[in-house]
Length: 415
Image (cartoon, rainbow, N blue to C red):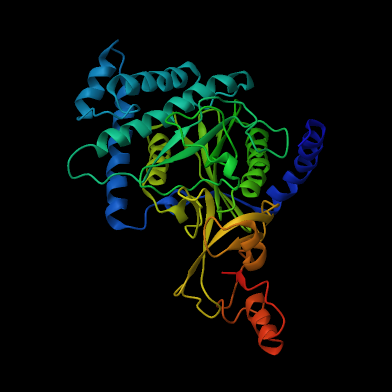
């Protein structure tokens, strides 16, 4: 998109953001972080133990005033250094020092307001996320511990416009997921973009973004409102290019006071405040990061039935036959073209794809046997079979009444 068009798009979306915030935001919700907790009881208990250990370690490091002692504290608390580049004692010590230095530098306390302090926040939050991720890797290397499903990592470069953006907005910090279980969650709808996930993430990309951290140096109500509205801007871009996203996470950081945000089709939830200057506030943010590392894909906001197939270099989607609302008898289709993207922050997030039944089909086969899949997420008081908006039932009835007519729209996913 041309720079002038991107600037025009940003201006339009900035005008829309206040109304979207007023109509969809539910602030100060107590149990937002609990939404990310793993459903599996064993994973949930492991995540709880990890979060508690990491929080206590971080508090000890913040209260330490003996030069050089933090390295020894980490070594005593976390055994089995291993080969994880984020989990070495020296790397953990470096990241812990960067976070502690930023938090201590605020002088008047974690609630001290100053817009001039926004840029130093980047290094502090980058270090915190890298530290927690490294601690999880270190803890999981111990015998008998359950391995996390992924690593939550910050993009190294802050205050950047992500690739694949439809407007000119820059994000403060971006978070991404590095899968450790083989599940590739990220969108690549163009074979030419089939790039191996690097070990270290540099510049942010909307296709690889899991969540955005919006930083504000001050802590006035206006700062918090602006942070919410900035997240709304970024969310639109993420939905447009990540065709397997149902929900989106985000974080606002006003000074050292943090809120976790969750976007759904008809809501935006914001947690209660997490003050990083307090042990309780730090523990809550650490708990969220650990939950994200262990939870199921749907808790992260991804649709597990839409995946990137690394072998064939394309996205694939699971679709249950009409009448099988329980998902039995599902078929897998391979996406070859995106017709419609989810263009709005809130709503049904309707997407349409041209797909075929086998990977690697020639273009002639796609034209001959291609189908159109409509994927949407409306609110439903009825089951899939009884929902009046289920177009698949009507299309199959048309097909039965006029069997000589080819059925092109033969699949529609309206959960």
